[in-house]
Image 1 (cartoon, one colour):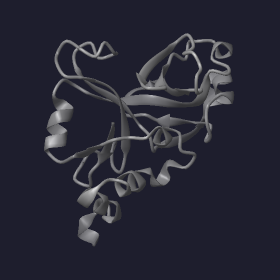
Image 2 (cartoon, rainbow, N blue to C red; image 1 turned 60 degrees about the vertical axis):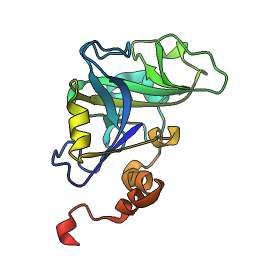
Image 3 (cartoon, one colour; image 1 turned 45 degrees about the vertical axis):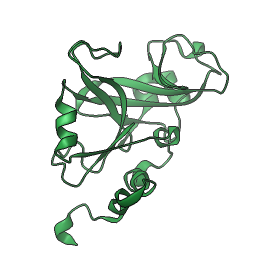
Image 4 (cartoon, rainbow, N blue to C red; image 1 turned 180 degrees about the vertical axis):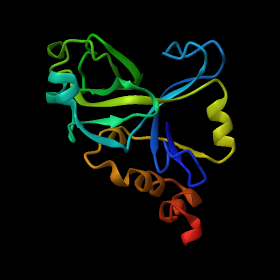
Length: 190
């Protein structure tokens, strides 16, 4: 699933962003079995490339990532760390360090030696930091109208030019939600 920021979202960290949800827990126990030990949600911002080459920070991973070969700003939490989102090659066995999220999409442990994933990955993108919400926090933000929750496509994660991702994701939605793709970021300027 994707979170698409609405124009009402006041947090500049998320203005005009599209967030890929990677892990969601419905309760305080972290029931998904993922990295959320105390519940909540975790995702990465898909449309904020940083301009910092992955090779400068993570050496050999720079040769494996998709274009643009830069770190993406995954969110305001733990910006000194990195998360890697990968897609497996069709029919490939998941390599060591691959944690499935949905189908052939998953998280890849960047401590895994690059040579162990060679040939197994169709795509890879690295995010500095992530977006995180405590238990119940994201639900409140959705109810307040800060986010549209929509289905995602694997291609959304690995676009070469993510600058129009926000509008493109909205445009393909059914009904009146698609109309928001043409809405100005500041409705007062309309």
